[in-house]
Amino acid sequence: MAVDKFPVESGHIMMFARSIGDANAIYYDSDYAAGTEPGTIIAPPTFMQSSAQFDPEYFLRPKVGEAWFGSGKEATGVKREGSGGGGGSGGGGLHAEQHFEYHRQAKVGDVLKATVKPGKTWEKEGKRSGKLIFSETITEYRDQDGELVVTARGVGVRTERPVDQG
Amino acid sequence: MALKASELKVGDTYSERLVEDLKRTQIVQYAGSSGDYNPLHTDEMFTTQVAGYPSVFAHGMLTMGMTGRLLTNYVGDGRLTNYGVRFTNQVWPGDTLDSTATVAELREEGGEHFVDLTVSTVNQDGVEVVKGTATARIDP
Image 1 (cartoon, rainbow over the protein chains, first blue to last red):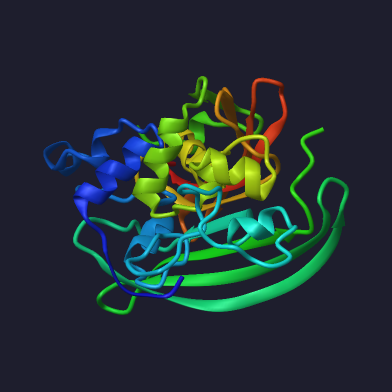
Image 2 (tube, one colour; image 1 turned 180 degrees about the horizontal axis):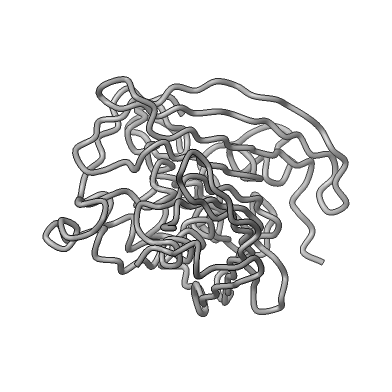
């Protein structure tokens, strides 16, 4: 997702590390982190994904004044025609691949800017979910000096129907 | 704490249990920290009745994040230069995940030492849920 300003913050890193079950003190204790090789609180390897928090338009977050497709009184807040698909009706399909290239470690105090380039698109016939449509996006995270910090390549897939669990 | 090229050989492995009996609450925690509030991960009513899945399931990125924890525990903080995965099967509440990193290659480039790893995370039935590769800078 394109994001103008993604401030890398210590509280956010602490919560992110907790959510992946990582108790490493380098993610929350600045005194401890000062004595490590990086010398400061750094972002865990998959932290760039949480730049979604700083995308005002991110479609997988409920927004004030807009309908949300999750359940309330009814199973979904948005009625859509012909939403017979599986991952497709889940909003954005499923995540097929994710790759990160680290040019340096993102650290607390960085303010990153993420720009997105579309990548390839391809189709495949899946045994468990019908036709699969893959699409790739490449996101470049640059720091306040314009230097590349992380290059992320994500592949999403939309399925014709929910993935069989058999 | 960092790995040393002189002490590693191709085929060496490092394993950890990533999670035992994955709780829905941890998936909620990940939704909150990552900002991905797709109801497929936290909203049982939507996921079973509208999307047609048997229950909510974990974000692929939660499994990638937990697998990344194994990698940083192995190679040391701030040492990864590349990390990529394919999500090969879904992860469900109640799953127990184990992950193994295996040394695939040791190489020297521009006077620096690197280790290439393959990484595989499997569930309690031995089904692979994440399959990936990583590269880390290591000491001589």
